[in-house]
Length: 95
Image (cartoon, rainbow, N blue to C red; front, side):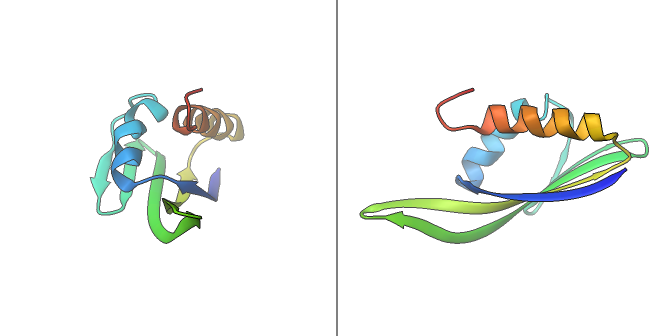
């Protein structure tokens, strides 16, 4: 199955990269610019970051990223489990 999905997150690139290993279950990946790629035979996932305009609320400024997921060779259940774990580990304030 091939699937693409994107979300917007208020995070810095460095915070994203710091939290990513746990969010993907410590699966090995290669970092290439603003993309993170995991390959396991015919099954792959790629996560791409695209900086967005900062979110400003009064004097508060939050960096934002568009996070795009591409999956290939995974079942719908595997993708759902991946995204659920990812969200849990990236959620502000812990999961």
